[in-house]
Structures are given as structure tokens and as C-alpha cells.
Amino acid sequence: MFAEMAGIYIHIPFCRKACHYCNFHFSTSFKTKEEMIGAMVVEIAMQAAYLDGQEIETIYFGGGTPSSLPIEDIKLLLDAIRDVHQIADDAEITLEANPDDIHAESVTQWKEAGINRLSIGIQAFQDDLLAAWNRSHNAEQATTAIAIAQQAGIDNITADLIYGGPGLSDEDWVSNMQRLIDAGIPHISSYALTVESGTALHHQIEKGKSMIPDDDQANRQYAILQDMLTANGILQYEISNFALPGFESRHNGSYWSGAHYLGIGPSAHSYNGVSRQWNVSNNVRYIQSIGSGVIPSEMEILTEVQRFNELVMTGLRTSKGIDMKGC
Ligand code: SF4
Image: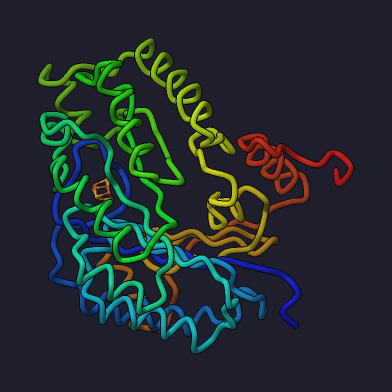
């Protein structure tokens, strides 16, 4: 029976450069890349029963930087999923891509492999900010990347933008959003620059080499974000997410609605309605453990009260809210 819908998240734990604000799990060394992809293919088979035969409605390649992988690796992972899961004909299959990885050839290959949605990590169109954050791309590459993706026929594009960072004036902020609006980007995710412990940005601030992000600036720019996108028909459907009607992220939507999902790869989280589990955030330990036939994860069984609270907490992030009749 394939009565319900579910999603799969694939965590690609490699990045070419470490962005100074980032605390996701990734390594800038690709030395273990081949073993990692092999281990993830094995984990997909080991976890075949986790979603209990539910049809897969969304697949999301996140990270890390999935666009840094050669197409063969993306295909290996998708084939491994297709081997053990039924994937809906209209499944949303997203790949997170850095602008410097977006070329006519790569986009065509992704499309042929089944990717039908790109999440482009633009963040800003100011070269000095991109350099200060240690991003691997510049503003020109960001502009070109959007055009290339659209020319290749990928219309379902989401772009990330950061606000509230020192050096981002309100004029810059408005112009960053305007560039995405003018380019016809149908979905925008936007986050305030936050200082996470252990990041390069945190160290820089401690040593007085970077300024602390200003809360007033972040609040002001968030209000500008809401007003400007709404005025352009890109509607807010979650705290950080805005879309033209019909372009809301189905994958993220499943997290907020309590749907089941399977996470593959180091640091990936899974949820099956009963328990939540998360894989070790360490590439070498992940590969070794999968190699010895053990999924390196910790698990928490959720009580009914915890499940209810989570549904309320995540539901209240969205404009849909929660259905009190179902409570
Ligand atoms: S590319 Fe993304 S995951 Fe990698 S370091 Fe930068 S923000 Fe983090």
C-alpha cells in the first residue's frame, strides 16, 4: 500500500570552502568522497523499510554542497533510491547548488537525472560581503547562474538571501530582492545572519575582527523583506520562506506538517511518526560504521505529547497554521 506520501533528504557533507557563518556538517576535504557515496548507497538499502512503503513525493539533496558532486554520484544515489522506493511521477526533486557550480552542462545533466528544482545559494549580490563571508562565488556568477538555470528550462528555482549582516545597507537589501524579482525567481528563502558558536565568524567577533550583527538592522530588513515580496505577489508561507502561489517547497512543507521523512548521510535526521533519529556528524565514523553494517544513529521515541507539541511548533511557523479540529 502506498497510501501516504513521504520525503527523502540526502546530506552531501562536502564544501569547497567553509563559509564563515556556517555551522552545518561538512568537510572541505573531498578525500573520502568516493567512500562516502558508496556508504550512502548502502545506507539507502539498509533503510529501505524505514518509510514503510510510502510513496516518495519529495527528494532533497542538501548539505554541504550537492552541486560539487559529479553527475555520476547524483545518479548513483537516485538509482539507489529508485531501487527500493516507489517515487511519485510528479515528485519534487531538489538540488542545492552554489552559483559557481551552475553551468549549461551541469544543469542539463541534473535535469536529465531527474532534478526538477534548484535551490541556489545566492546570499547577496555584493562582492565585498560574499568575500567577507568566504563564499565560493561572486555576484556576477550568481547573476549568470540564474540565467543559465532558466535557459536550461528549470523554472522551479529557489534562491537564498541573507539579511542583517554588517555592511548590508537597506539599499543593498532592497536591490538584492529586486534582482531576484526581476529575474522571475518564484521562491525565496531568507535568513538573518546569525553567529553560531564554533564558526569562523564567532572567532572573528571574539577577536574584534568582525562586528556583531545588529538586531535592529535585522528586524528592519526582515520587515522590508515581508513588505517587498508580498507587494510583488511572492507570498510568505513560513517564517523564512516566500513563494509565488504554487511554488511553495513541498519538501519543507512535509517537515512542517508532520509527514514522514528519511535522512541519508552524516548528520541527516529522520522521522517516521513514532521516533526521530539522527546520524553521526562525522564523515569517517559514518563510513566506518556503515561499512560494518551499523547505521551510526541515535534515536528518540516521541511521546504523544511531544508529537503534538512538535506539530504545533512547526505548524505555527507556517501561514496555514494548525487545524484545531484535528487537535
Ligand atoms: S556552502 Fe553552504 S553548507 Fe557549505 S559552508 Fe557554505 S553555507 Fe555551509
